[in-house]
Length: 429
Image 1 (cartoon, rainbow, N blue to C red):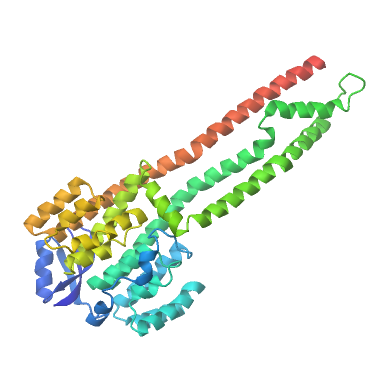
Image 2 (image 1 turned 45 degrees about the vertical axis):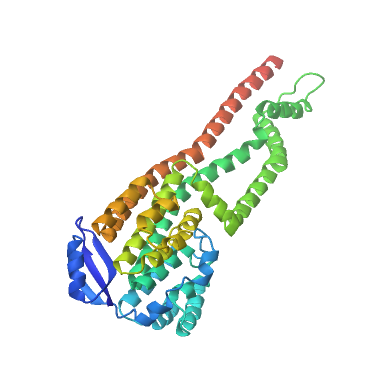
């Protein structure tokens, strides 16, 4: 048996790349044809030897200790470019050590440049690429390390690197959309902080009136021109700004930086991932995204003739939600029990819907599990795309609508109080 890389076109016209364990190229072509693919090319996986595959059987040691959703300290676009360049070099047949050394010279990011050299040394000593990456959990997210490990197991390392790059690029786009809503929310919060001194509008104008009366002659209100009145209002606002707005702003900044640190703490990240699954809209989105990634990896590994239990173990660490990954990981030993089917494991995991499990059960009966896994992965990918659009609109609404309403209410209250105070001044005049 050997590993062959292939390029094909599916029924929808989408280009599909992958790897398959087979006796020869003809066997690969026959299997792809049975799956409904139009074959474009087949090449032996020269960049991936059996010795490398044997070294990759075990899961990277450090990976299981880190929540899969911990963010990288390197910007996603730099990390995606790194994976994309490495995939190109590996696909070209360049040895992995040479590819890493080449990337060390080519990459502009100082941290990735340093790590490339260190990983090349580890790989030269016999360490798999995924294990070398797992030694840097603050740089390489655990779920992308899982994708690489699966690629090593299945003999499609170049494809796995491409998929990791695509995932990171998509995540960067999602964050860009999310940042738009966050910046609008931050602008609104800042505006509210600036309005804190006049939050109690009537008291604010009472303070202004108190300062004004100090300029009065006897018991009659002195005539105050516009310049003097503006100066009095500014002095009153400045006092409230220094005593209220500034401390609130400092507290807000401290909270933001503290929260940015805390959400990277593994124990807190696990709690957050569990909580996200309970939130309407976000929970289904996280589940669909996890199912799509898990099923896609499982399809590739089944297609490469990796043992089912080993395929499950590898696929379980490619999802980005720690709670779902934990549920999937603990089923690896269950799947190794005699007479346990994929259907049984899916049901026991409590991650997949009954519809998903029943589809797999039908596929096991028909002997077409890999094909069904691919179709299910595509279905959940469509669910993710639709959920993202709804999520963006909902997030923008939830983040900004309450603040906008509060700001509008405060402005109306300000105008009403201004006219009331003005009427009182007119009576005194």
